[in-house]
Length: 92
Image 1 (cartoon, one colour):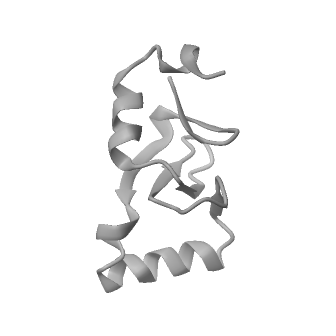
Image 2 (image 1 turned 180 degrees about the vertical axis):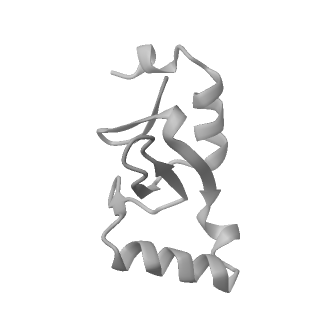
């Protein structure tokens, strides 16, 4: 299935490694270091210029390429969307 991250960005759920809240996870130094490493490697995609609330780490099965998506959608909403297989039908 697919997960809508905001704006025009949709990802394959099977590629998701984790969904993280920006407010709570960026407190730790290892997480901040990881975010910087991803940014320097050019592996960060900003979904929107709205206030970011979460980041999603994905890994393509074939190429093993990791990508971080920064989304204005909360982790709770993303979780609800992943549990509701029909939510994409409601997006207009």
